[in-house]
Length: 88
Image (tube, rainbow, N blue to C red; front, side, top):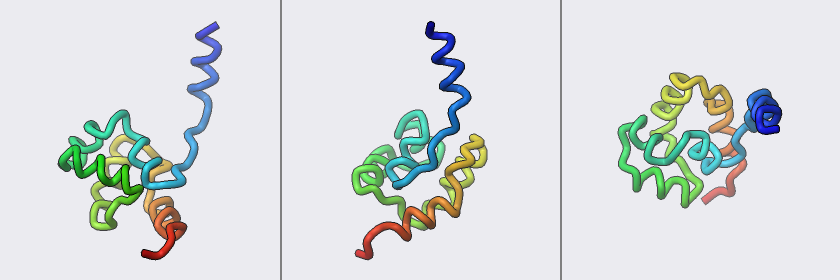
């Protein structure tokens, strides 16, 4: 039943984010992330819409990820995502 599904889901390792949108979606909500970063909700919403997180926000994001033990949001991952994007 449901307990089997719940148990299996808890054992599943979260997938590493492949985009900045995935990074933002790693939190329960955009408003939660905005509060954690001390940012305006609309700033986070626009980052997700643009699939972009300005590099000057990475340190704060990494500190919040570390505090919440979100190991797959790390500096290497952010660099890989940025490097995979087309040059603007």
